[in-house]
Image 1 (cartoon, rainbow, N blue to C red):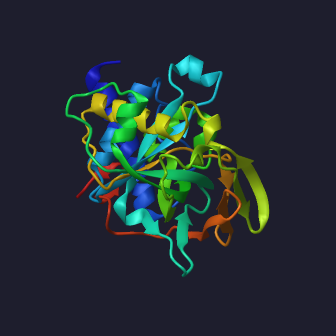
Image 2 (cartoon, rainbow, N blue to C red):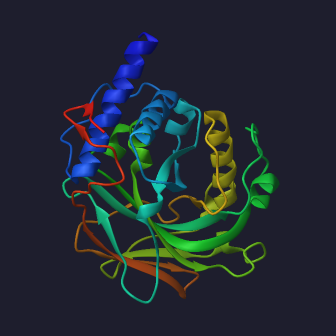
Length: 284
């Protein structure tokens, strides 16, 4: 495949996903040839980022589990989280949206806030170097949603190609003295409508949440994407990926007592955040 054909296909796929997200509608099938590699998938993501007018407020990091991780040569993936989809939980109920007819899930996660930017040009990090760039850790919930219902069934490259299957982030309370708290070993539960959907420990992930930060800094360094102080890293689903639909109530419980919650509603049309794309043509 020539570079031009590959570029054009990546652009077409990005435009269809962006148009569907802007319209708040589902897609019946993947809009093109499936990316043959993670690098191809990130090229689609780059094209989609070029069609977005919103500010990137952070990045989600997800797991690629064995044996697939061995096949693709990587055990994590990433996608942007736009600032206008990041909500700070308060006493009032928080509502987050998923694409009706598409894919929708909620994930209990530890959220790492970037305190200092990685050095320009650095593409490899130790855990200590990654930790030094983090200034806070919060409790949270990632909303994983895509117009494509089968996104998680089609493999990590497809997930990457639609913004990493992200549609928002709920930021809960900060963890005091997070360096010494042992938070990665806190038991975590996620409940949907009062029923436990999953449990887990963040320490079960490779190198825990800080491993997610190290991976992200390395990946974005190779892609030439700057990381800004104040951006968030959603470090991975501690209890798993739990399907949700409009009307659901989601609650994540950390260490038995610390809680963050939200309700789920259907995504609707939005005329900001993405350039207008109609019938695969960028008109903005």
